[in-house]
Image 1: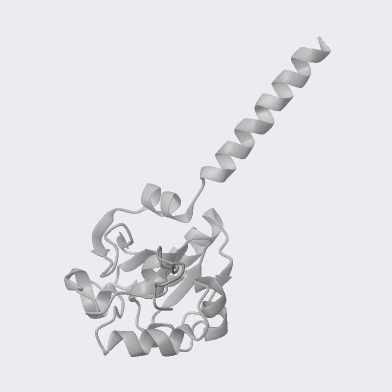
Image 2: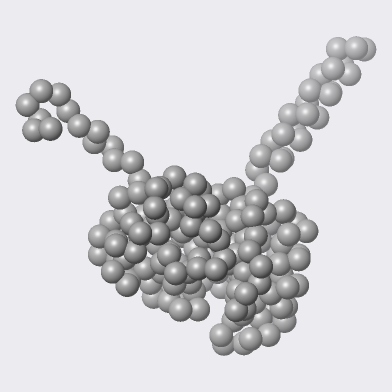
Length: 187
């Protein structure tokens, strides 16, 4: 009997761990709001920002709902009709829909999309740049991204929409697969 109790307990713990591990803010939002559009990264087609819509809900209402569903690691205040919530692997930005201001757009960008595509000005007054340096694993991300962008980085869905093409130069923030060679490689 004791073996059965231990076995059932182990199975329950395993299911709890698996269930907790699979929870993500993207799953929560996609379960609760309809998908409006997808914006593809200029450097990697697998990195995207998904745009969801909350009809007839204010930023405050949507923020409260999302935060009740899953608490962010960090969150900005609502400022200039915008709020940014930071989760483990995603940035969630709440803004009013320009077409219908009674609706709120929920932009869910992968960490990689945010690092490689957003213009640094997107975060001004919302998130300290040293926090972004830590999250992105890049020293002085703001300066490096500004240099790379040349004014062509992603400014959020309301500014850029689904027509984003990105800067001409690829991101150097990802580690290179070619780490040098041996003798005679011209180091």
